[in-house]
Image 1 (cartoon, rainbow, N blue to C red):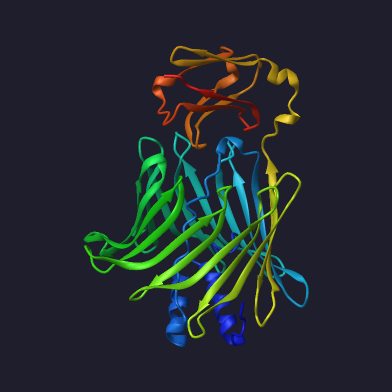
Image 2 (cartoon, helix red, strand yellow):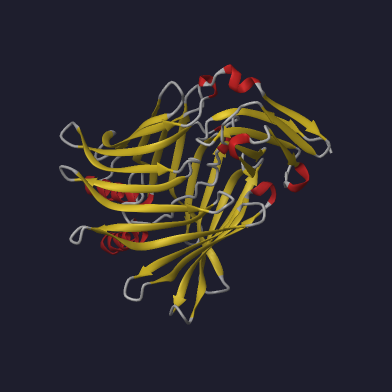
Length: 432
């Protein structure tokens, strides 16, 4: 692997990497417009050697909600300075009684933690994310000010099909259209297409103009390719970027190759991944294609560390200012435990019985004076039903399977306390 980049150009590419591949603790520090404007200035200064790549979508990151035992409460980002880690910024997370994320707040370090921005999340009666509102801290006036918000829409199966981003107009106290994302759902609840629209014209006399389109292909329910098209006009799409994914036998991603279109597909950047014996991602390396020399150049390395319960506790980010990897940033994670079946008394589990009835499941609960929540999941781990059992009045509940869209013949029942402490989980195969 050659590494003969000039130091200045490597430093520039590292700055690009931070904008294009932001770490969790940094992703809310810069708005999309700030990053875009900065990138445009760099492009004008350095010419076509600098190419801008859209961050690849996290299409494969689906987690089984019913198995969640911890929530993250803090991400602390430190930077490497004078051979030591010093505070840079952090994000704190807050949750409601059902452990839905309701607030995330960003701080910068300046001898003390200074407010930067925050998101407030609200949910529908179906426990789906309904709205997120971002506010920034107005330091001179010592108040929070609205900036933008996102609203989310779902189909009848509870799958996200639309996001609308609106900016706050403080002069008129109105929310103005900015960006819209529409999702086309394919088989097995996978995303087939994603179209990005930008609002054009005035707020009262405008339209949604197509901007980008992601077209995803799958092999064995794993994304194999994402073709990204740019809208030359309202009806004409042209090639822009292509993401190609490869996996190992355990269905873990090994490489993500990103190419950009000119008159043909040209290499742009790639990520390679390493795993430990417990299937944890322990390393991700980003390389950029050096056009002039036609070879790959190391840019960033992400090194992950885990505790004995397989929780990610630290990510160290390194770059290559000259010819070797050096520390750049470190992110440390804190968690709060929300369920652990091993800590429950056996008597609490002893009297939870599931009985199969024709077209229904009856759950007999012998636990008194508890507010309980029953969640039902499909085989992919997506919640397809929920029931609140206030004070467990009847010590039991009938679940009518005819009212639930199963998608497959396998369903999973998970019974929680109102603090989302897992009491019991049961997997059923429905014979039709």
